[in-house]
Length: 162
Figure 1 (cartoon, rainbow, N blue to C red):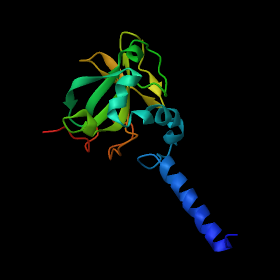
Figure 2 (cartoon, rainbow, N blue to C red):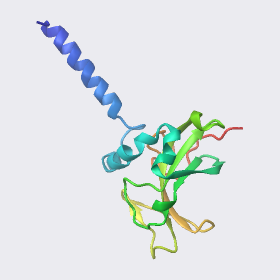
Figure 3 (cartoon, rainbow, N blue to C red):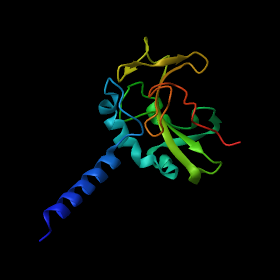
């Protein structure tokens, strides 16, 4: 039989391991948005390895957008104006010039402005309107901390390769 201190140490180590694997990339905002983001986190975690993104219907766009990264867009989801926490229309990656070195940093919900009469909302956040692209969008930086805020459109820590 194990001694009581050894059992306590093993239990603490296991609890610590579980808490580390379940922890999001940044501290929870006061409005507890992380609880609402659990379906997003669960649905997109499998795309942390960039080569898996196409298996989910996400296609890479050609340009790296400064402070956003590479967008991988799911055309089938984009065609449906419904907003679902577990189905973001885009995955955001940053990293090198090859796909195997890119890291998932965030997600984005996109709704064409022609599909809705008012700006959509999700997680208590109103989507921003891009009048050039004619879309409403909401970003969530769930895999890389954004010092400007979890739902801010641009993340100053996201870089594009030179």
